[in-house]
Amino acid sequence: MVTSTSNVSRKHFPSLLAVLTLIKPVTWFPPMWAFLCGAVSTSNLSIDTIWITIIGLILSGPIICGMSQAVNDWYDKDVDLINEPNRPIPSGRIPGKWGLWIAITMTLIGGVVSWFLGIWGFCATILAIICAWAYSAEPIRLKRSGIIGPGVVAICYEGLPWFTGAAILTSAFPETHIIFIAAIYAFGAFGIMTLNDFKAMEGDKKMGIRSLPVVLGPKSAGLLACIVMIVAQLIIVGFLLFLDMVPIAFLILALLFLQILAMFRMMKNPKKLVPWYNATGVLLYVTGMMITAMGLGFSGGT
Image (cartoon, rainbow, N blue to C red; front, top):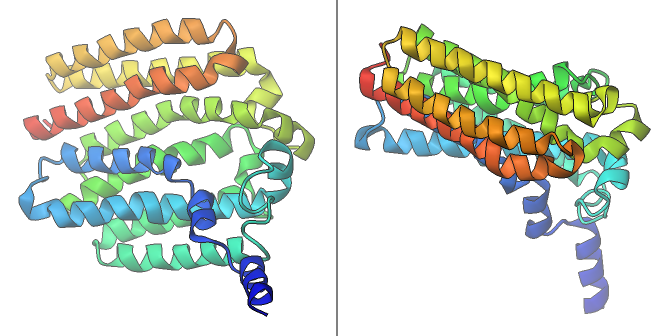
């Protein structure tokens, strides 16, 4: 009888480890980093604002990003049978409709938490929630487009968290120069998201998802991703020079030079070397984000 009850429990209730795997902690870093960049760029980050900053980091990473992963896995369960059959839902570790209930619960939690972080933080969070569901869920499923899909993810991973961090720390709509910087780094992140699609090429082909690596092929998609990232950072450099932040501009330029060297290596075999670039070139990209944010914060942004 004890064994039977235990088996029923395992069958109908996912384990905490399965839930944690579903919401992919490894994906939380980009929005949390961007949120922190937004907070730092305001020059308002201090001991007095540390708790609201921590709450914002939890909101942007474990709650909202985790929710988006649950939503994506639920609607990608058929694709994951091909691409990642060991994921919690296709493997059965998240049984029945638990994946959907987890996504809905985290959506509600995100909305409630953001309500206490100010009107602009709340609005940005609601927009991120809408984008997360529209990206994965039928009938909209924006991820079917190789341009709109990565664009939405780039905005939600980089632009919106940066905006939210700045809005929460200032309790106001962020200043124009902060929004511009966040928008350009989000534009550059389109390239990163395109590279991220390489790992799902086979499943995307079979399921009719027109990601850029599928439509253009690895070489052309990789080249486009590199061009987008380069252009975005050149715009950042130009804008920093316009703000008379010359040392910060040259630091970003130096990081870009190192990225270009890494891009040349990646382009020799994009399909094989994209994971390597994600661990090197992308790290340099996000380092530049924080350096830019610190420069804005220390200078008062002007």
